[in-house]
Image 1 (cartoon, rainbow over the protein chains, first blue to last red):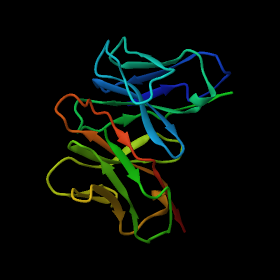
Image 2 (cartoon, chains in turn red, blue; image 1 turned 30 degrees about the vertical axis):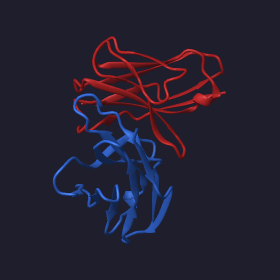
Image 3 (cartoon, one colour; image 1 turned 180 degrees about the vertical axis):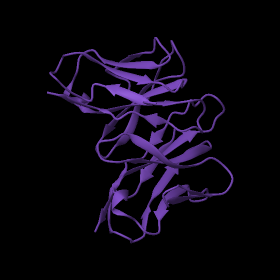
Length: 113
Length: 117
């Protein structure tokens, strides 16, 4: 049982390049989330999805897009990377409800130069 | 909106000493409370959570946290720490409000616990 898997684990981009981060979960969870982690700021929610075909904005959505075409996958896209998007990105999933545990992937460390 | 404040960014302690990691939150609605732990180069794992009932909750590895509604706090404690407890700890809240909060978490800034031999 793999849980939540993120690819890639590391990436270096040049300013203006685009990329897609992939998140896959095998727990049949309805809810999926993308967070970014920056030193001294904890984790902040970028976008989330409450089911296949749905997406919604979180706290810091600017510069990112997401898609959830299949229930098990949640993609995070950067159309034109900026140095301010240098961060560690975490995907998470949960079954249903605010009282359930969120399961996190191991993170993607992205550097934009 | 909710906010979470972790009062200490770094806490160094010696092995077998007690430790307390402080967490205060602010919310206009009822929330669930969580502590997550992040070991080096890993994702976050749930340590413990408060949903309702007894205000003292415990984890399987000896941590405990107490929900104090009047002080809006959820401090994490352990009476005797081990080297293996070295990690970053995050306090988080999610809104209780029916089915509309969707489990979105608001995190504190994190506290790095370093246990020295």
